[in-house]
Length: 206
Image 1 (tube, one colour):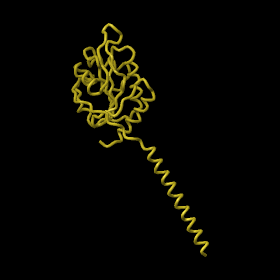
Image 2 (cartoon, rainbow, N blue to C red):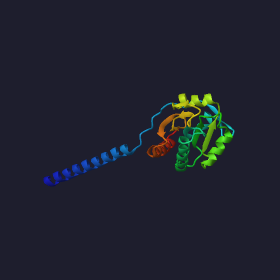
Image 3 (cartoon, rainbow, N blue to C red):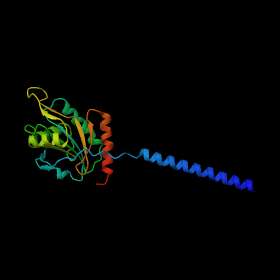
Image 4 (cartoon, helix red, strand yellow):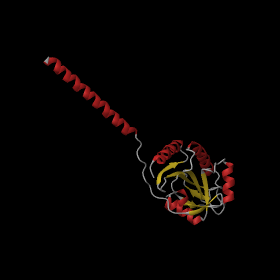
């Protein structure tokens, strides 16, 4: 009788250890698969510019939206068209909802009027319902790029093919106007990561 009792106690103890081990593995696995929170890399300052529709666009219009910012100019011969094609593909992969936007700022606003931006967008088949193209005062856009987004932007030799030098990064911004990530538009892996990160930010509580 005593031997049977000891055997039962031993089996129970082993079972408890097995259950505890499986539970611990499950907890660790869940923690490992849980995505880490994206860093907060600064805030986009207030701005008031002009969208391709001719309507004013302010940072307040992007409140409660998750958006991807980029900087281009329509006279750019190589880098900007490549960026636009990348963003057209990106837009197709993003959730179709009113709180997700692409926002493209022109660093050549003296040439890129709303009409020019509308025509430029049409050549790439841009879905403007979810993509705003923005122009305005050059000083404000340069200040926004350099001080707000911390992206390089500068005038170059106007006689050259690239009269303006600017970053090709895409920038993820959350509902509060906080920058959450920078992504190389020329790197397919980083663009795929942008899609994942944007979905994660969408799931966050504002």
